[in-house]
Length: 351
Length: 218
Image 1 (cartoon, rainbow over the protein chains, first blue to last red):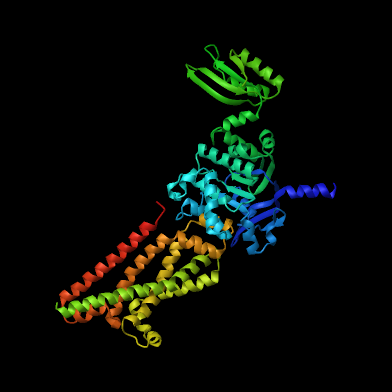
Image 2 (image 1 turned 135 degrees about the vertical axis):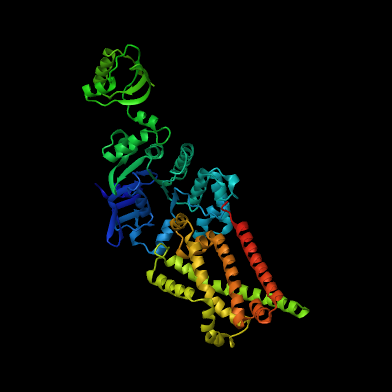
């Protein structure tokens, strides 16, 4: 590989993490929060970091702006290694790495406008310019009419919008989102995610999203890393991991989400598995027999129950059920025949 | 109650207010920075420093455990050295400040510790220095609690001025002892109580009103 293309590739990388480990020590006790994490996030990415609570993802995101100092390894932001910077240089670097939080973390005694001005004051911007910019940002997040409102007078979604405006105030190149939608209801989550996507597209800001909800990743991220017990177990494009999750953690996260952690999650899952859908109708003449279970046992292939509306009438199941068959066409055919033999009416569903 | 006694009450009410306000003000001049240092150097603070914390912590605790009436006596040579005399309202301010400062530093510490850790983290993520966090986050965010603290301190110091009065401090406490208790003038003694109660109420109400007006949390 020549020097030139490699150099070009290097310049595209916004955040690079190399062999990062973090150990928390308390007297005799030491906890390995992160073990040997390496990943790179490219400019313009919306990069998701997902894991169960306690997996270490919040620690990881705090290592990206050195709010938490790694015990080992390096973090490069646009090629600058944070570990080599002085305290003062680090603070200047942080102005380019904005952050939003699960609990919004607005100053409770300042109104929206002053909250947005806050980072600009720290940056040393003059008051009048800061207020002008704050007003523009409020408009961007759709809260022009809330300039004088205090956080306590705003809903969760509105507070997060103010927090986003505040994060954008110093024109960052990176925005870190630590469970930014976890305290919000599904509709508000949706609108905040749309806003983040818009910011990413319009301003080219690289966004890192920490979440425990697969639906959040699916909605906005292009790349994802899965963290389990402090280890990076899997990372790659979102589609790739949804379609072929290799790790146990990934499968578990996808599965758990399918059970309605967030609205639209189920729809998302069946979009990914492109297998044939089949509607079965249980009628009077279907015998009392666990048909679906037996079919799975017989063919040794899983099917996905997407929905069911059945009643037990005198020992006979009545109603209908929506199944998703394996992708293998031949297997689908065998299964359909099996069901017809058991006296069930079936129809293929295409949408 | 004659004209002269009323005049005395009026004059010494002002003396008491003077001692209370000035002592509290100087108390904060010492106690506020100490409280900030305690918060900042605490193990969960923004710049943990166990040794500094421990030193201030121990001194504060020792000072707070000395009863005020004993502190008054112990400090007589020191007061004489500073003011030139050990009696009178101004001289009383010295022991009042020394007694109030550690109390104030504890109250400031508890007010500042209440500030949401997330907000401090947010400020750090914006590149704020520790000084900026102290002056732009900790103190402004804790201001309601700090004002309530001032209110409570005023009430406490008011009580202490009366105590100091009985051992040569002047003000209503001295009057109550000299003209009320020692001369058996119960009506006069009663009036000093009424005035002290009214002063206490005024301090409380004003402080709470200001705190309420400035609070944007609800």
